[in-house]
Image (cartoon, rainbow, N blue to C red):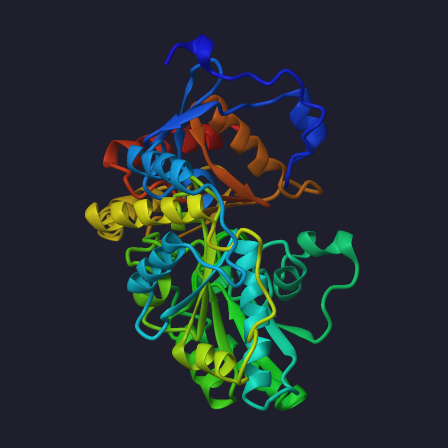
Length: 441
C-alpha cells in the first residue's frame, strides 16, 4: 500500500477515547492505520507485530479476504433488517453455526453486539429463568473479585475490578463476590492450571448460608483475562459447578476471551472439562471485523423461559442490532475459517513453544510472576513505589516503539496473539519484551 493512501487524523480533540489517558495520549499519539495477517502498520507504514490479537479478538489474523468479501456481499443484499417480530435468513444461519461449536446442550443463541451486552443479557436471562420456574425470590447475583464482564451496569456490578466501579457510585443491588484465585505465594510461575486454590470455590457455600435460596446465578470467567491472566486452579471450576447444581444456581461462563480457540478448544469450557448453563461470547465470533456478541443457553434455561407463558413475548429484552446482517455474515465467514484452518488445533500445537518462551521471562528485571495457558500469558511486574501501573505502561510504550503491540493491565503484561502465530513471531514477541524490560526501570 502506498504510504500516501493511509488515512491520517486531522484533529484529535473530538474523540473521547475509551480506557485511555486522553491528555497523555493526545500529547504523544501512537496510531494504527492498517492491518494484515499478524501485523498492524502505523500511518508512517511502520510494522507492528500484534501480540494481543487486537483486544483478544482477531484470532484469525487481520485483513482476511473471506470475511471482507462476505461483509461486502451482504451489504449489497441486505444492509439492515429488524429482528423484533421479523427475521432474516442469515441471522438464523449464524445462530445455527454458533450452536454447532458450542458444547452439547447449549443450543440456543441470543445475539448481542458486544461482550458487555452479552454479560447483561446473560444475567437478565438467568433472572427470567428463575422467575419462570417459580423461583422469583432468586434475585441475587454472584461474581468474583477481579472479574471482568464488560462495562454495562449488570456486568460491572458482578465484575470485581475496583477501578472500573469506583467512579460510578452504587451498582446493582443484591450482588456478592467470591474471592479471586490469584495466589502468587503458592502458585508463582505455574505452567497451566495452578495446583493450589480450588477450595476458594467453597466460599459459595458461605453465601448460600447467608442468603438462602435467593441466589439466581454465579458468573465467572473460566480464565480471567482483563484482570491480568488468572488461571483457574485444578478442581476449582469442578467444585463451583457442583455447588451451583446442588443449590439450584445457574452457572454462567464469560467466554468472551476464551471462546473460539484461544486455549486450544472451541471454548474454554471444553478445554477445562466443566460446562456452564449459560455462556457469553463476542470478540473472536466475527474476528472483530464487525461488532457482535452472543449468549448461548442450555435447553433447560431456554425452554423454561420460552414455554413459561402461553402466548406473547417471552423475554422482554433485545437490541436494535441483534443479529445484524453484516455481523452475521462476518460471523459465518469467521467460523468457516475457524473450521477450515483448525484455529483451536493451531493454538494447541503452538502452546508448548509459547509457554516455554513466556516462562523464560522469569529472571528478567522486575518480573515477579509468569503464568500461561493456551495462547495466553501474563507477566506480572513489581510496581513502582507509589505509582501502580506506571512501570507496565512504560513497557507498553517501549514495545510499541520497538514494533510490538502488547496489552497491560495494572502492572501485568498480557499476551494473546492471533492463533495463526508461528514460531518466529513468538521469538520476536518475547525478544522485544525482554529488551523493553531491561531498559525500563
